[in-house]
Length: 168
Image (tube, rainbow, N blue to C red; front, side, top):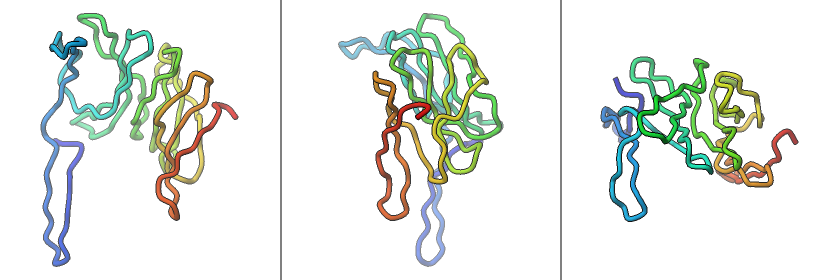
């Protein structure tokens, strides 16, 4: 089962598809570009962030059995086991790590168009709404001064870049 399929159609109705069936692997490299090891099991990974203290990688991954996407965390120490962070049946994706490494923002489809939720890494399943509006949005960065940067779809201008203060 694949969770993502690339599609294209022609004017006369011919459909071409390329299913995503290959799992990927998180791999560690040193500063010289040498592979030093793998992190976690193979899976359908999409987006990831590394905490500023380099102790944890946070990523979204599709479950091939349910085709749902959730946010996961993996400590960077050898032998660490992945920990699921989101448990909602809605798609959760595009994690962005906070500057202090204690929280993560992520986009979600659980409340209409993509909105942005916030989650303490120490409290899996206890996320709260960070940015909500009728327009689709995806988090892209979190600055040291607490502001978040995100893309928001505007039907007139396309994807606009927005900046907001969490809770403001």
